[in-house]
Amino acid sequence: MASDPTIPITSCIISRIRTNPGNAANGRRKNLTYYEKIADALAPADKIAVVGHGAGKSNAAHHLTEFLQAHHRETYQRIVREIVADLASITTPQILDLARQALRE
Image (cartoon, rainbow, N blue to C red; front, side):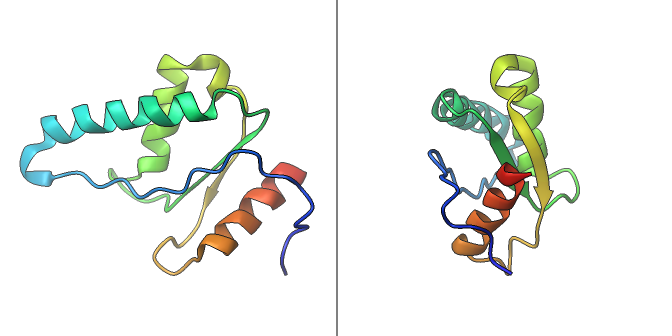
């Protein structure tokens, strides 16, 4: 069942973060810079839904929320929902539907 497409999504960031396991320190630095860019993009949002795969140490959505909590507290406080989804088999429209549902609740 699709969510109501009339619920506006003013800011949407869909990304897959990959790190280089051979150089973990460099990967962490790159991710911090990347998370900072995401935080800047999310700053004007009233509500935020984070969609991630929810598994293991490589859960970038969880790392992003931890980063926001530590470095962008006001943005972190606007997260209304963290959603676990099978990102390997989900489409962009399905991600948007999940976000709309979360924002509607």
